[in-house]
Length: 291
Image 1 (cartoon, rainbow, N blue to C red):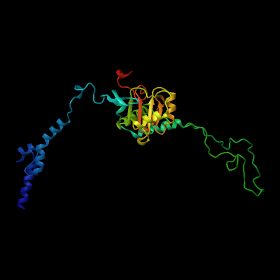
Image 2 (tube, rainbow, N blue to C red):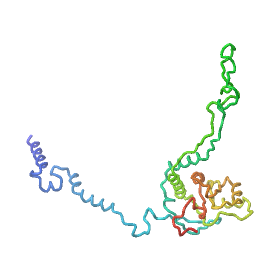
Image 3 (tube, rainbow, N blue to C red):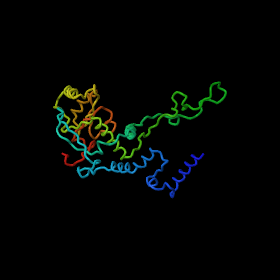
Image 4 (cartoon, rainbow, N blue to C red):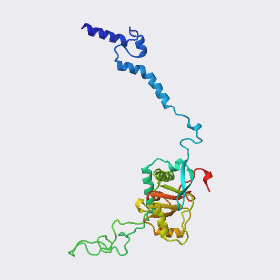
């Protein structure tokens, strides 16, 4: 038809660089036959690109803060025991309290600690370990009874144990850097949930006090069984305090800072750490805060 041939000719001219429609249409990137929606996209494409480039530009925060955003210290409030009154703010590194939570690393660390605590002393006597002669108890034929071998056989009373346990080492390996990362992840998990309490002074009670006093302190601050057990970490070994807390295991457990592992940081509802004893557990970022 004449109409279809005319449209075909216009389309052919619009595609050629030297055609009749190679003026403003070629510059803008569309022809007279291009739909209006595509024409608007062609006209606004350059402006949108410039807007995105401006949006991606970020201000230089290093000029307004002495620390880079990834190096800014984390402020932690310390408290006075047993009144739990706020005393001062202490700054710690983000690498200690703001690590991303990695459950796989925590799992590997807990399994590693569990394997290290296994004794592996279970031992049984195999058939080669049982004392006695290895001669055949009776003839193979002629007795009318079942065939038997020597008395060390596992099917006889007093014989050896088939495939029984022998002393072995259950410990597994874990890179030191990965285990250190698990420590910091566990502390970051507690800090993010508001379950990390730093004590500015010592966790102590008056001498010759009864366990009722410590129980009253735990209940007063909500550290009892209704809100979960607590883990108290001290710097020094106080035998009297440890004996008192040993009678209050249903409320909390007391540990020395040198005996704390990743599992201890995760097994209770909150951590109560002495700042003076937080060196092995929570190193201070700035040396000026060290006592």
